[in-house]
Amino acid sequence: MGVIDKDDVENQQFHDAMLTMLDVAGRRIEALDRSMMVIRQLFFVVLGILGAGFATIAKELEFESITILLGAGSFIISGIAWVLWRLDNHYHQYLIESVRTSMILEKKLGFNKKNKLGLATNLESYRDHNVSGQLIPATIYLLPTIFGMCATLIMGLIHGIVYGPSNIIYQVSIFSTLIILFITIGFINEVKKEAIRNTSKKSTPN
Image (cartoon, rainbow, N blue to C red):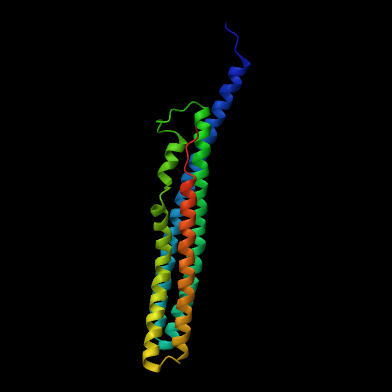
């Protein structure tokens, strides 16, 4: 009977522990990805509920009140969209670091780069380094805000045409539109910066 090398046993235990860790990490990330999908879906559900509620309430409101409500709603929606985008971006950053760490561990464990069962390979399906790929979710979050901004501006212009530029609703709507536009531009610039930063992190360990 041959003597079992203690180092071989320890190496095998380490190998098994790493495989278990990678498997658990993969399952957790899949669960996190499903949770993010639920959050995105809830965002649109909330928008639908708010839209239906606004349509119901607007029937009993004056034109001025509708304009004010639209402006306030645009601010609220832009705030929600910003929080959700930051959460989405944090998740994306987590994926990037997870892929890089997984590549290092899998290389040390002797995994073949073409091994489709590796965690790093599977995580690539959840990650997109392209700037355009990261702008799409942010654009979806921004669309309701842009719609509310345009609606507020249009209703404010109607007030200006009917009652003159001195009308308070017209002035408030223009001011609100400019603020929301400034927030939107800042949001888009921040998204671009994060996307470019994430793209620069794309690297495969040697």
